[in-house]
Image (cartoon, rainbow, N blue to C red; front, side, top):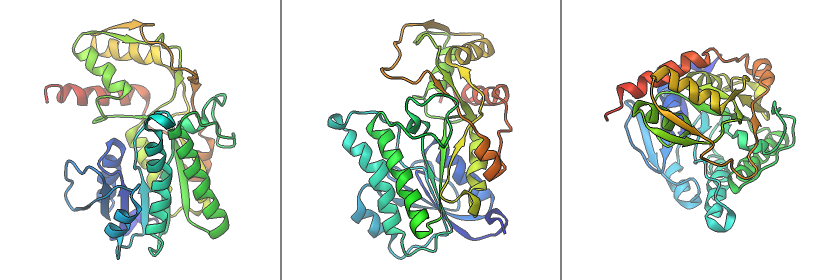
Length: 310
């Protein structure tokens, strides 16, 4: 029976106060899960949800917080995108995104976990050619992407050798209402709302945007899905859009903002074509995106317009 049809399933969401995490938690509550959030920085409270404050990189503190707690499902959204070099803070990035996963597995070893969903990153593909496929060998280019790859291989090894029910979902660019103001699309929207001049790159990069509701739906389709255990699964639209086109769409929808293309240089080693082959998601999860880019952009822009003065 699908978990969303059964009440009182115990779900732990690491990073449940972030952009994607909040949406996962709200959807889980609607599906009658018993939800616990584990976060370093609990913020806005969600009704009927338990909160645990802990750093997953701190094994002893984590063990103390999770002692005697049992969960049926774990969704790991912990961490943050940070491409710091190793000698400039990258060590702590690695600790959070790899050692944090190992600590979670160690501290939850006594739980009867039915599914452990790890949220990876499209950065794991590095310079691989598009469309990126899960069969490609990863090519990490930073401590962040290396840690994500390490976590992927660790969980796959646990599945292959010990039957650990892990699924690795690899999102590309997830966007939607309520996203952090420092991310690409919210920055563009805000500059257009302010009718500002703003610098951007030449915008030739091809990227793959996935609306938040579509991504959350994929997360829940991974639960109790034995076909997905041990697998890496791309989650995105599968439809490339250039950064320049994306900026111009927002400018046109808001009738404001003056992008200054070419003012920001491309990142060294940046993959100019990063978009997914999503055939595995379709075959293993019976998932495909339902929200068009136009629909998702409109809903996202409407939200930022409503919250513009907050």
